[in-house]
Length: 138
Image (cartoon, rainbow, N blue to C red):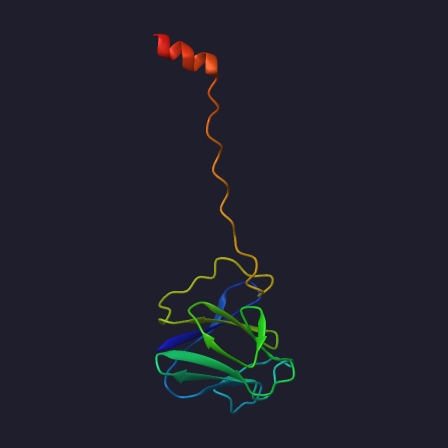
């Protein structure tokens, strides 16, 4: 079973749903499995389906599209920690299920193209040739 978490504007988790083997519809309609209060979401915006050992999200012909990791997609296999945008509502997908979730950083854009680069290691210490020669003579 996987977990879908709604992420608030401040990066906090505002909702959490366990996904099973049944289709899980997300949209503005009150009959959706996950009803979102978002005028930019369609009534039946997207569905998350279990296919074998994986989950897939499919756009249901929404006007504003379903975005996964910064790309507008009609259908996509979801990977652990996938970022989903439905209308203006943000979600994070976790598989295996999340037990305790803390969103450390609120992404400004969901493009996935901005990968943090660790700082470069300092250059090796330059050795003064005179010191090296003096050390050899000692």
